Length: 291
Image (spheres, rainbow, N blue to C red):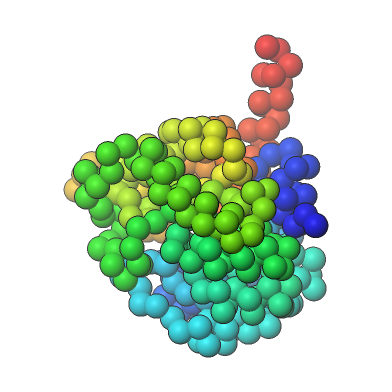
């Protein structure tokens, strides 16, 4: 049985848009905004009205230096939101590294598991397979609590950022596949900003077609990230725009990645990204007819 994500990907005309709903007090750009059940459900309703194809619900911050959140606390934070979102017609993704939290959300109706760590690939692959769900496997190194800061990472930590990300991701992907997950239900996320500095993230965007060539749908999450602000900064020591003022850079990075093959984009502001994708698709269609 195909997951809903696989069916959406097979019929898409442009990149799918994943809207974010963080049920956390400390996420880097929207922490605390959607802890209240009414506010969270209203946000999901807005994201769907603006055209989100997927709703990504998370209860553990992944900002640099964040502490792990116990599984029972994550489940408490999630509350009835997965079930309520499914009732609204949403395709729900659960953003967690925990098989326990993932299984809870899958039982509530989620159909995608989205992990920011390669470590639980086998456990989450087996779980997704059992529930007929898809798995988004994101590249990173180490825990969030070990990350020193936004876009702070040794410039020489990778020999070749694309080759190294591909190799490390593929090793984890093999564990998920060996655990029973269908290849068609696996999505690659290069992890922009995770254990990477701004130069690393920009190069991954510029060379995303090389990762797409691995043969898996690719998801990118450039939304509001510090590498976007750093790329647009007037100089090395210039102050960076705060997360809420990075929409222009988010759209630029997102369109660049879609042009290079990204199948899914994870964003905080759905409506302007959908608009940008629509214009890009119209221009691309005319250009294709003229070639």
